Figure (tube, rainbow, N blue to C red):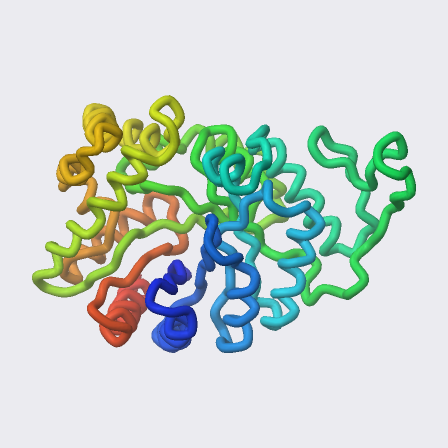
Length: 348
């Protein structure tokens, strides 16, 4: 079971990468490099490639609307080359607030576009002449559009690998089904083992039924915050503000994917209450309304026995890789938490 974490460079990028190097030695396997509407992820990924030896360097995530499919493939191939085959292309649709509000691109057909992007990327990595006539991407551009001079081209360089793993951050039934069918890894949100079957079971079954049998099983990343040891339970409170932001204030009232998942996870009344409070500007009250039951089930915080039980619950629900954040007052404490988790995981 691989252990992954999201790069946080709020305290300085070079300092964050130095911590990743220490986490790598303590047992970290994957680092996700965020983008959102901050600095671009690929620049940071290239830097990490030069500073690390073993860890997989994954975009977490690149929105599919902000680059052409061919550029996404080129970028992943370039980072794979720099890292000697350690790249993973993490993709997602983001949301209309970012895509239309920051990039000025229509937020349309996310599932269908993702499907076409994956197909085109894999053509590029196989060094085929890229030809794709989809509903959303036409390569080469048809002659009745543009200059009419476009012709099929293939990647100049020979990639380190002719297939780079693709991870998808997906939430809704259609997108999760497409992820299970096509992708190599899945990044769910607000995942609890107890609710996974109810929320995503049908979509995963539908997608897996269509999955290429020659493709390895889908790698499912989940886990939450990590604080292992006696008296650590108070750290669960740290998740309140972030959870309230996503459940209550991410997206419009009528279109909040995170609120939908939280509701489907057995917290329907709480989901509505949190959203009402958050959108009314009562953010502290919204955070206080996050159920303690959810805080316990969505993290790996507690003594070793509790964390071991949660790891078994994650495994039994279908999680085969961990996506976590390490709690600690400084890098030394966070690295120590990574080592503790590595030991528990290796003993499963």
